[in-house]
Amino acid sequence: MFKRILLKLSGEALQGHQGFGIDPKIIANMAKEIKELRELDVDVALVIGGGNIFRGLAASTLGMDRSTADYMGMLATVLNSLALQDSLEQIDVPTRVQSAIHLSELCEPYIRRKAVRHLEKGRVVIFAAGTGNPYFTTDTAAALRAMEIHADAIFKATKVDGVYDSDPEKNPKAKMFSKLTYKEVLTRDLKVMDSTATSLCMDNKMPIYVFNMTIHGNIKQILKGKKIGTVVEE
Image (tube, rainbow, N blue to C red; front, top):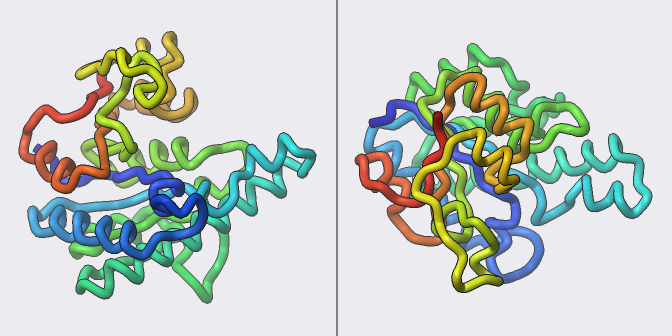
């Protein structure tokens, strides 16, 4: 069903039960799943958040300058991206990290054509540092990069089975949606992705698949056409 996807991971997903930082077991398992996708001959690009290390918005509410806080959050995403690159290359998956801010000693600068060429050569590409601009989330970065590389869909990894009408961890009667439109997500404020990212996907007809990343094989099953989680489209 898909030739090229963009996988959006939250930084919190990397911390496991530690509450902070990067759990080596979690990131190793992610690398194995990504390798399985490449074995299906699917081009894989990723955007990873940095909330397991630093959250710019949270720091700004405590008095830090918002732009400074957001740039610190971008650096946190670079740390996560380098960690995942290392895990992937340990299992022989060629990977490139491209950063939206200039860090030539650590990773390549983001160049759209170069990113597409890496994907065409079978490499996994990790987009770090968000959009390179404060006030924009990694959700927006994921939507933007997905459009730029002509991905077929965005895969949003979560800790629950899909999108619910309320928090399923707090409400055992929460209802999960199998399908939603972009407008439903926006009007009901369902927090699939932030409103800027959702609007960008709506304007460009980019489907969003929301699934439980803690269940091994979920991404592969969706790629094969199985209905898992929630799909957001027109």
